[in-house]
Image (tube, rainbow, N blue to C red; front, side):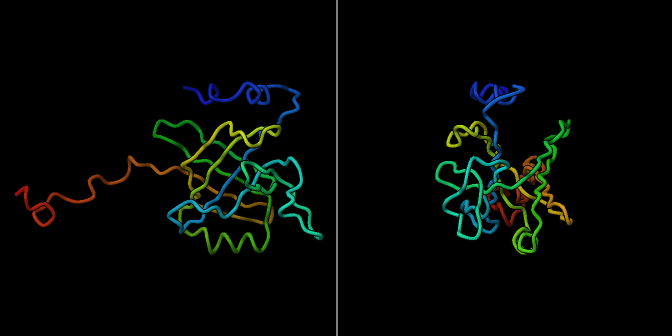
Length: 177
């Protein structure tokens, strides 16, 4: 079944129309790497629908998307989707145009092991309705320069996991011998 068949007609129109009032917005949620349950550290959107009143102060105005009670901060980003491969799922990457000292410090201290993320697509006219979800991706590498931060995303390949994890030897399975 194609992912296109699960999208609403408005989302398909927004994707394929040359001119439309609706925009497809990608929401990126990065989870804390050390938590067993999903605790979000950062929430970003590649477009905005208005001011985020909860994050706006007298000295700084923050734009983004409010979706399902969560605020996603607008941050210009590009995603390169994986190419089709015979060997399985390829890797993709996300490039964020946000390089600050604080962002580099977070990468160095917090993203030192695979970090779970979630990508979602919503429409600008109805940000509370998720059109598509892409779970199961992990940040496995991060590089940065003066212009951008690049995250390498991969999926856990369960076919490469050893099974079973124990050898069938008398010390582990005495009933077999």
